[in-house]
Length: 122
Image 1 (cartoon, rainbow, N blue to C red):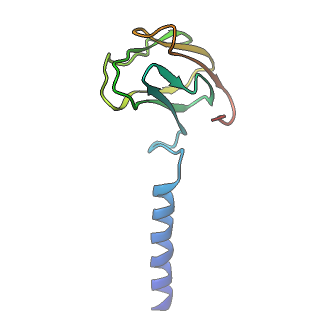
Image 2: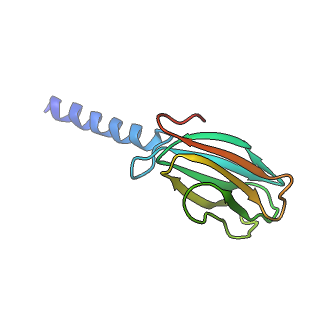
Image 3: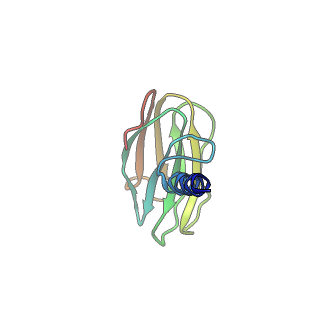
């Protein structure tokens, strides 16, 4: 009986640890976040590992339209919105250099993203 209670406790601890472990997506790929504020992207330069899901999280109240202007693969863009929260998420599987801008604030808001092999640099 004692071993069953101990096994149950270990299972609960494992589930809690899995739920609070940062940087893991449901399918197992790491995650990273870009903050979209009132006329800024933070950080403005980022390196991630191939296979990383990058989320763009709106925190301000200003309307933005984030668009990939350079890099491998197809079109990556957000809706033009001021809604708070994650308005763009994309998993980057191809290595390379990517450029993003806000088409509404192109001189202030830009991101240089490098997708490399190996581990991500936050």
